[in-house]
Image 1 (cartoon, rainbow, N blue to C red):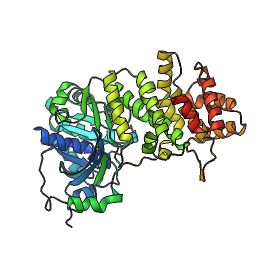
Image 2: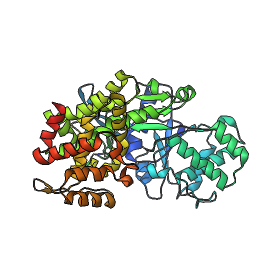
Image 3: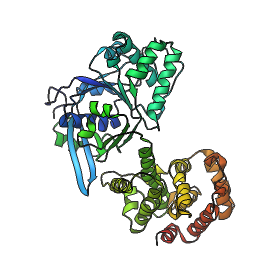
Amino acid sequence: MERLNRKSAKAAKYPEKIIQFGEGNFLRAFVDWIVWKTNKATDFNAGVVVVQPIDKGMVDVLNEQDGLYHLNLQGIDKGEPVDSLDMIDVITRGINPYRDFDDYMALAENPEIRFAISNTTEAGIAFDPSCRLEDRPASSYPGKLTQLLYRRYRYFDGDMSKGLIILPCELIFLNGKELKKCINSYIDLWNLGDGFRNWFENACGVYCTLVDRIVPGYPKDNIAGLQERAGYEDRIMVKAEIFHLWVIEAPESVAEEFPADKAGLNVLFVPSEAPYHERKVTLLNGPHTVLSPVGYLSGLDTVKECVEDPLIGKFVRKVMYEELIETLDLPMAELKQFADAVIERFVNPYVKHFVTSIMLNSFPKFKTRDLPGLKTYLERKGSLPQGLVLGLAAIITYYKGGKRGDVEIVPADDPAITGLLKELWSGGDVAAVARGVLGADFIWGEDLNDVPGLTQAVTGKLALIQEQGMRKAVESVVH
């Protein structure tokens, strides 16, 4: 079998218009695929040059394949199974700035470069005051980007038409605002001057985005079969679900330059990404957080099993369609469409998502993903959402430890949280457990015993779980 490269495979050649910080699975399965689809459907005609954001990376492997790789999309789309395999050819080359710094900085002098896109993990957008302008390169991603922008500003003598459209994809809320703040901090630290600051502010745009696609990564379980299908040896093949969403908080002028929304893709240019961020966290992450302990303590192991179980599936849908969806402010038809897509993702036969992996740090997750909805529901409806209350009681029960059959239950969380739960459960009084957990200010930042009716409701659910088991407790909520 031939190795995949531009000699062995027929591939298009595109001018470099995009600098991409990050060569990992997500960007290749999401952004580069979107660029590939946009190239095919419009006259975008953009190539991507990849910059390795940390010292240790994989641009060498990427370059061995001349930027080519295959993407295997699997899942359910509008009720139909999808299992596609496509060669993505938009990456032109990869650069390791730690080894080839001059090649990296030369990108600033290319007049066709228009976009900078990144996914350097949540920790990547951070200001490191130890970075210097003279570093080859600066260690932080914002530092590297500032070096590049400053070189571009000087090379084109402040030409306002040579600014960049900057789209961070890191999974933090208001990622664009955080990145812009870091760059301004480097402008101050390195004394780069008001002229550069004005150019950065007015010629460049740093926009907040929200990305959503599950990317399991390299398909090691069935790589032989996929390579047989592809007809090439591909060391960086990547697997992802069919669902995708990219919300970009940017003006219409950006959409005109990056016409991904015209390519039949789920790419939205919006005035604010905040409601979409809230929608994703509430309708995808929120149900995940409560279905996991409920499902696990009902004898189930994966998200798919939970959603397809006749009883637990009703619980999941109740939480989504009757409780959490009522707390959001987007049009109901749009919310239901998104919720339907989430259900399809949950039952994706190609993705095995174990609930135990979701239960890592369940209390902080419930605080950010479900507690706001619980409060909003109470405020709007005048009653507590019983599915979310049961979900919280299930988390508290899971943190009791013990066994499920022959398997030891070992909650993974902050030692202060696991220690508190161990101490509370040692007394055996469910009312004391409920009061103690809800009153833990270091978990919630407040005393949840002050939420009307919550202490009594959680106590009742805990007692029901202890006395009759999780499935009986679920029956009390869904019937």
